[in-house]
Length: 183
Image (cartoon, rainbow, N blue to C red; front, side):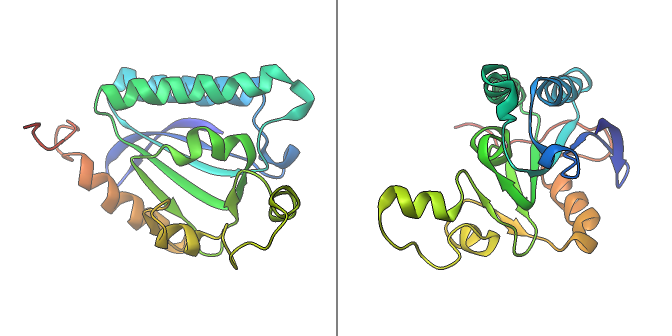
């Protein structure tokens, strides 16, 4: 689901992954919709927000699906170059190619409590490395203590969290992006 919205009177481009449809996986259509929503952010010079809940890239689409990882990441690089903020919201679960591409590229990464966030599942990783893993190593709580997630917000508090976070980047009167001076 993509579109434009306002959060606390700040215009944003929003994308929301729908897990009930094919596990929220990213295929060519989903990747294209997200890329276009991000391009809207660029065109309108407004912040982008993506709420991720996904099992990863849509394997049935093979390389077409995997190319969406590069496409969405490339558009995010353009936003970053233009100083347009991107807030990534990670819900349970956010895994696979979505995590390996845009979901972890936020200027601010917000996670819900207890969310499973990672590339591969714990069993796959354990089999690959042949050993035990730290308890809860793919939880939002573990990731926030290790610097991969910036903050945790309950869903009921998410609107206020996003509004506050947007104000860190955006002047609400003219929607110009504030960045610290380079020096």
